[in-house]
Length: 218
Image (cartoon, rainbow, N blue to C red; front, side, top):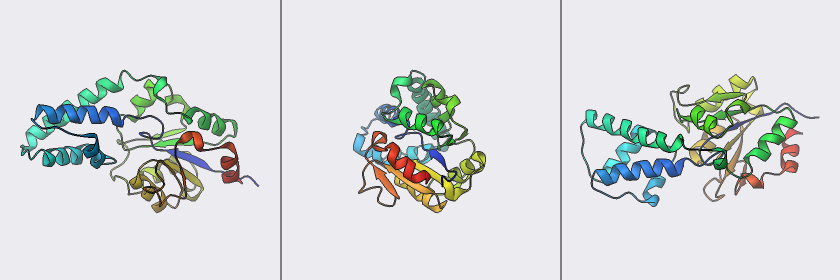
């Protein structure tokens, strides 16, 4: 018998790849402060809040600033990031995403977004996906960052589905831990060696097959 399930998707690295824009904005900020910032170092910022990211960046560059100056830089960084976001189009939707969303819609399966980004609605609007999601939980709705399960529990509530019947799709270990803490089914997108705590791992969204989804539903 088919059971009622719902999906909750992370945004960055799952639906679109905005990490590259964050990196460019942080790199430009570091350069302006007199030091370089590599893609390898950028991994330290994955799944981390904007304020924490700035603290990590400044520690890498051994730069000490006042709280007032830090706030100025955070606004500056976000402004540059949003300039990149405002140029996004539907071509930036990651491969396999539309096929998966189409399958869910055909099978009357609700889905929500569960992202720490306060810019999530804007990004979805730019790539033409905003109206497809039943519910959106973004950085304005949550007070606790992943691996706390708050973002996904709010998503389940907005969808009207019990947490144990929700499937979370994530690309970060903190997101997988949050899904597991919420007692949800967790699907990792990326490296199985990194996302080993997930219930299932796929290299990318194109690898999630209709047969796999049908088995989840039964």
